[in-house]
Image (cartoon, rainbow, N blue to C red; front, side, top):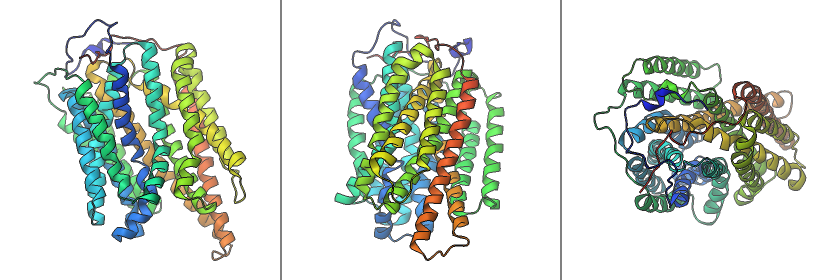
Length: 502
C-alpha cells in the first residue's frame, strides 16, 4: 500500500519509537485483552435481542417502543465513533480504552438494574457512547502493537473472527442467560468482560505522550455526529414507518447533507476529525466498502434466521444460538486463512471478491428454506458457507482499512472502520426488515390472514426476500471490490505506527 508524506502530519504525536524490529513481549496477552473488550462491544448488538420479550414483560413497555432498546445503542455508537477515535488519538489510546471499559461496564450495570423503560434506554445509549470510545481505541491499539507483518496478520485474523462471530456468540449467550437466569444478566455479564479487560489493560498497556496544545475539531464533531445520527435514525424510523414517510426521508437527506458539509470542513479544519488522507488510498476505500456491505449482510442473517428458527421451526433461544455455531466455525477458519495465507500471497483483489461470491451463494441457498427444512442439510451447510464467505471479508477488511495509516491518524481510521460496521448494521436491519415486511404483506393480499398456514408462508416469503436482497448487496460488493482493490500483495510499512512498548 502506498505511503504519503501526509502520514507524518497530525495533531497528536506518539512517543519516540523503539527500533522497528522490537516487539512487545506481552503482545499476545494484549491481543487477549483487546479481543475481550471487542467481544463485549460486538455481542452487545445482539445479546439483548433474545432477552427483549422478557424485558418487555417485566418493564411493561409497548411493542412500538421495543425497537428503542436496540436503536438507542446503535444511535449513540454510530454517531459518536469518529469523535471517539479522535479522542483516542489526542488523549492517548490506553486512557481512552480504560475510560471506555469503565463507562461501558457502568452503563451495563445501570441497564441491568433498570426499573423502567426510560432507564433501560438511557443505559443502552450510555453503552453506545462509551462503546464509541472503546472500539476505535481497541483497534488502534491492535494496529500499533503488532508491527511484524506475519504477526499482525495473525492478530487481525483473531480480531476479525471475534468481530464477525460476536453477534452469533451474543445470540447464544443471550439465550443461555435469559432461559436459565434472567434477562438482566444479558447486561450484567458485561461487567465480567470489562473487569478482565480493564485489569489487563492497566497492567499491559503503556501510555504514550501527546501534543497538549492539540484541540478537537468541535465543528467537525458536531457535523459528523449529527449527520450519522440523522442517517441511523432515518433507517430506524423506516422500520416502523413506510419508506414514503416524510420524516424518514427528511432525516436521511439531512444526514447526507450534513456529512457532505463535514467532508468539506475537513479540508478547511486545522485539526481535522477525520483527515481525508485516511480515505484516499484505493485499498482503504475498498476495505471501508467491504466492511459496510459485510455488516449489512451479516445482520440480515442474524435477524431473519433467528426469526425463522424460533417462529417457523419452534427452536428455543438456546437451540437457536447453537444453530449458529457452523457460521462461527467457518468464519474463524476463513478469517485466519485470509489473514495468514491468502492476503500475504495473492492479495485482496482475488480474496475479497471470492468472499463476496461465497456469501452470495450462501444467501441464495438460504432462500430455499421452508417449514420442513432439516438442520443438517438445509441450515447447517449454508451457514457454514456463509461463515466462510464472511471470514474472507472481515479480516482483510479490518486489516487493510487501517494498514499504512500514520500513528497520529490510527484512532480516526479505526473509528471510521467501526462507523462503517454500525451504519451498515443499521442500514441492513432497517432496509431488509422493511423489504421483508412488504413481501409478507403482499403475500397476505388475496389470502386468508387468519389461516396459520398462510401466516407461516408469509413469514417464509419475508425471509426469502431479505436473503435475495442480501445476495444483491454481496453481488454489488463483488463487482466494486474487484474493481477497486489493487493487484498484488499490499506493501507493509512497519514504521507507519509506533509500537506500544512498556
